Structures are given as structure tokens and as C-alpha cells.
Image (cartoon, rainbow, N blue to C red; front, side, top):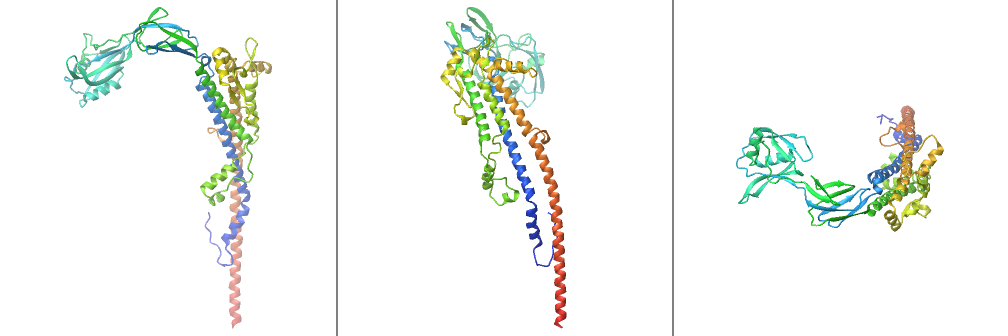
Length: 504
């Protein structure tokens, strides 16, 4: 605010008069400020919809609903889960397994740590694991201030591939403070070799035994898992492995074959479809709420002066009411949700020319018009359909291709007819996102890249111009009233002088 020296006539308060006049002059600027706030609220409301769209898209990707393997998910039931558990992929089949040996890790135990002397050193080793034919070079550095605990920490944080721990370990006669190393990989073939006498000496000082090739001698040598699958003998360095579409986890040996029964994983497939439907319904509910919400015309955005006269809570309540109905009957949202509804309603043409529909598997649209096309699930019907024909479930959701020919309308329509619901919905969600961004942008877009942003830029320039104009008008008012005040002051002075003359 410009500091001014106003008149001294005391006839009227120039600041107060100018302030009242400027309130009238500022009315158009206040109107523009309200418009600007309304546009910003509209922009944010559009973006809320896009956030919900992204949540649905992320859910589809996160649940792998676009992948055939999701609809071929198998559940494997073991007759002896304390010995063998398993999971199955699409191609898994039932079978038998007999476990004769569990894969174990190599263990290296020292004879004690009394010979250890801390020193500044650098010790190099070559490490070979059952799954690597080429040795890996590992260097461990120590300090002359290291304690045994420090050495144990260095071993654990190194790339030796072992878990080290120190404790009172029984040596056959007594419990002795000892360091033990357990390989982090199971199977036969774990080797830790000192590359020179210096590194070998480091191991022997810790109480470990090395052979003539400077290799660490195992107290217990790791072994492979050995088993028979459907009568075929096999072995593996790990207790967890995949064979013929089944991922096995061996826990113990068995005295008789364990049967593994493979069936469709109805619960997993159902849960994923339900999550998709629930998230879709959230989007429909949000959009339906925005396009049907009535505008409360008694509440307009507040000006800065109006906010000053209210409490924070009053401002919050007022703005909540003022934000209602900003996207009522919005064409972008209405057309977007109408397209999504048609994606679900339309039949799907299979490769053999048959027509299938989501109602056949227990998914229908709500009969309540006001719910705007929400989906409903008949749980029993959907579960039965998954168990009886998971291939049909997959066709309904992801048959055909997501891509549609952009040049040939007839071919594009044929491809659309062959598309599963999920392909159609993902394309419609993508189109809705683009339409909203064209109108309301995103947090990463510049204001001149979308419609409402351009409106805000234009309005901002008009407001800046009008504020400059107000400054000139205010200055003109002050000039006039100061001149008036000065004239009144002169008139008062002359009147007083004349009065003095007449008194004589």
C-alpha cells in the first residue's frame, strides 16, 4: 500500500471516502477472483476422478488381471503338508512325490577363538556355490582394534555367502566360545578357499581348519535334495524348485509317496475379480456423485476480505457448500461412464463364433438407475463358473487383443466385439484419462497445456491489468480529494481572515 499524506481540513476523512469508493470499483475484480477459484476447484475435481481411474488401472496391473496365467491359477493340495507343500501354474497336473533326502547347508565350525590376534589386514578368498561354477573373489579387511564380535560382523556383511555367529558351542566335551559359519545356500559344492597363506592364517587364528589347498574344511558338508516325482528319481541343490508347472517346497523326508492334487484356485481367481469389481464401483460412485450433485447457488467462492471476517471453520463449511455441483451433468464424465457401461453390456464374440456375456458368470449391472451402472456379483454363480470353466472366465475378461485398428472402422468394430471386458475397459479408462487431462491437465503439466489452465492464465492476466487500473483510479481519487481538501482549507483561512477584519 502506498503511504500518503492526506488533507488537514478535518471536514471529511479522505482515506475512508476513497476506501468506500474503491470497494465499488473493485467489484469486477472480486467477480474475476470468484471465477478463478471456481475454475481451480473444477480442475481439482476433474483430477480427483483421474486419480480414481489410475487406482483402477494400477489394481488391474497389480493383480495381473490382464495375464492369462491369472485365470489359470491352480491350487495344489498335499496329502502331507508337514513334508511337502506346493503351488501350481496353469499347466500343473496332479501327481506323487517321495522325498528321500532334504537339501542342507554346509556348516563350518571353529575349535575356539583363543588364537585370534587383531591386526590390520586384507584377506582374499575365492567362493564357489552349488549354483556357480566360476569362483567369486571376496576380500575382508580387518583392524588391529577389532574384537571377535567385530570379526563376526565383518564376516556377515561380506560376500562370503555365510551366516556367522558366535556362542558357547559344545565340542563333544565342553561348551567353548566358538564361531560357526552356515552357508546361505543349500546343496553340495560350497567352497571357501584362501588365496594365500595370509588369508589361510586368518582362518586358522579363528580356529577353523583348512586343507592342503587352503580350502575351509566343512564340519558338515551340505547335500542335495533327492526325491522321486511320479517314480522318476531326481535331485536338486534347493528344497524349493519348479518341475512341470508345480513349485515344490520340501520340508522333510517321507516314508511313503505324497499325493499332490491340482485343482482350479477358485478363491484366488474370485478374490481378484471381486477386487476389480469393487474398485470399478468406487469409480462409478465417485463420478455419479459429481455429475448428479446439485449446485448450491447461495454459496459463491469467498473473497480475501470475506474470509478475514469469518472463522476457519466457517470458511471450511462455506467452501464445502460452494464446491458442490461444479461438474454437474459434465459431458466428459457422462460420456466416459456411458462408454464403460457399454463395454460391460456388449456381448463378446469368441474365436469359434459364439457369443458370451458377463451375466453368464454371475456379474450383472445394478437394476437401480441412480447407481449409474455399478456391478453386482452373484458369488455362488461366479465361483461355480470359475470351478467349471476357467477358460470361459479368461475369455470374458481378456479374449482378443487390446489393440484396435485405427484406420478401418469395420475391422475395428470386429476387433472390439472380440475383445474381453478388461481390454475394453482399459482402453476406455485411457480415453477418459486423456479427455480429462485435455480439459483439466495433471500435476506434471504446464497451465498452457490444457483447457482450464489456459482459462486461468487468461483470467490471471485480466486480473493483473485490472489491478493496475485500480491503482490509477485510487491515485486519481486521492488527487481529487486532496485538492478539494486543500481548497476547503484555503477557504477556511480566508473566512477566518475576513472575520478578523470585520471585528475591527
